[in-house]
Length: 72
Image 1 (cartoon, rainbow, N blue to C red):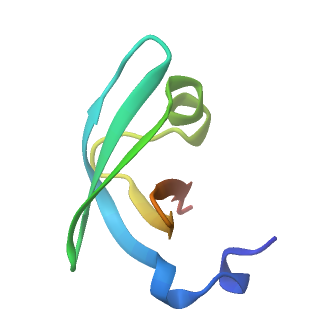
Image 2 (cartoon, one colour):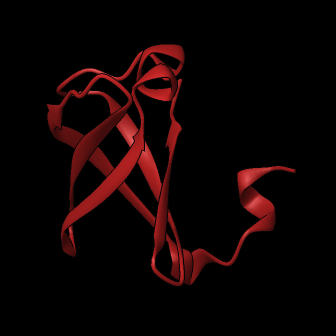
């Protein structure tokens, strides 16, 4: 599925502001024009997406869940 197929209202472009790494899960704070969006994702996903402070991303929000997509 393409990111374009998702509802635009549920997407927030931003930049990774902070990553709090844990052994299993990490907290990723994304600075967006609408404010800070925080996602808790696996640390493995942080590594596989190559997320670092300053990385451009899209925060994808579904109900109480926030996913992260890396922008290349």
